[in-house]
Every structure is written in C-alpha cells, then in structure tokens.
Length: 319
Image (cartoon, rainbow, N blue to C red; front, side, top):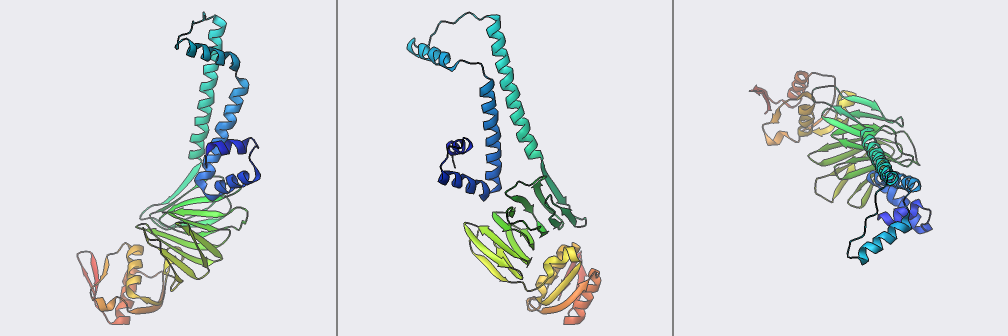
C-alpha cells in the first residue's frame, strides 16, 4: 500500500478495484487500520490548513523561477509590518496544527488499555468494550483500545488468557500473540504463549489461526500447537482439561501423562517438582483435583502409582 493510492481513496478518485484494495488492506491488520486513521487525520488537517492559507501560489512560483534563473539570488522586497504579522500568523497556525496532530496521535495511543495479571496474584477477569470477557492467567497481559473500531476488534496478548467473545460477524475479533493472529466472530477459547510457542484450545464455535500466510480452522474440542520459528502447525483433539485450571480451579486428568500434570502443578503452585525416573513420566492418570492442596495431590499420586515423594532443598522429587 502506498500513500498516493490512499490520497486517491480519500478524494473519491480511486477506481472500484482500487477502493476494494484499500478496504481489504485496512481490514487485514489492526496496524493498517491505525495507519489509515492517522493518515486520514493528517490529510484532513492539511486540507483545512490549505483552505485557511493566504499564500498566493502563483506569485510564490514566479519568485521560485526568478531565484533559479538568477543563480539562486533574488532581490528581497522590504518587509512591511503587515507582511511580517502575516508570516507570524501563518507560523503560529502551522504550529497549532502540528501540535493538534501530535496531540491526536499521542492520545490515540494512550487510549489503549492494558490489563496485567501480576505474578503471585489471582487471575483477572475483565469485560472488553464489546461485552466480550477475558480471563487472564498470572504473568499475562492484554492490550486493547477503549473503543473498538466499526470493522475490527483487536487485542494483543502476552501470556495466557481465556476468551469468551460476543458474536459480531461484521466486526471480527482478532487476537495477536507472537507472530500469530487468531480470528473469531463469537466463540470461547484459550490461548497460551510460552517461550514464543503458541497453543490455542477451542471450547465452543470456530476459530481461524493465521500464521505465515496459512489459515488453519479449529472446531470445538480441537487444539493447535505452533512452535517458535516453525511453519508446521500441529492440530489435534483436546486430550484433557488441564489448560483451564487457572479459571476453574480444577485439575481434570483423562489418561493424562504424569509429566504433563507435574508441569501444570509447578506453574499453579510455584513448585519445583521433578520426576526422578524416566519410566514414571508417561504413567497415565485419570482423576479430578478440585481445590486440593499440593500436599493432598502429591499424596494421591503417591498412593495411585506407589511411588515415593521426596522433599529436599526446596525440591520435590517423584521416584
């Protein structure tokens, strides 16, 4: 996209194909939409300034030609008080216009709202401007505009969050995480980003995952793992409900390998649990822990698999 085409579009001089191209470009990314809005504001401010300008363009052009023909030297006309005040007024007008544009751009950026779930605190649930709900896990944050545009609802995520999106076919909901875009119109799903790896789990509805020019469609009960730097997306059925522990306060295991449960327990309880023997890692466990203490969970693991739980130097070793 180039600025010349945007100018034609703003002047209603673009062809139907060019207008369609601009509209598709605007809607394809939130950054494009922001660029267009700022470009439009600058353009409109510039037109308004041009209307108010008292400069005679023809005379200015003649003076420029005279300067060129005289080797860049031109006789300076005496500066009259009236002309001096005109120059001062024009300078002030330009300064005010630039200040107004900077104020607009700055306030547009500051209109972004950021919600952060700090380490050590409970998860945060927030309602977005369109009525959608988001639940943030610890060490996570989302950034969004206080007021969504008419064409897109855009959110930037860091960490992990569960979204329950209000339907809106004419106003897609787009989450940007790492180099991935998740596009929906009304559904519920979980997104987790860790070490630039992205996992999307869909509970209801349909989700589009866009990465590297490829679109993958996920249905309810499906999940997708995108590893950092990889163009291969691993799509599979959801095997357990462990991903939802931070909002349901339950650890739901269904033939879940022990290593996976241990990973979640370490995160949930800020623990340091390791598996001492390799043969224990893939032991399947099927149970539900509901608001249990870590000691109680470890006791059940001990009784289920007849393994020892050793504690030493702040570390818990299963062996």
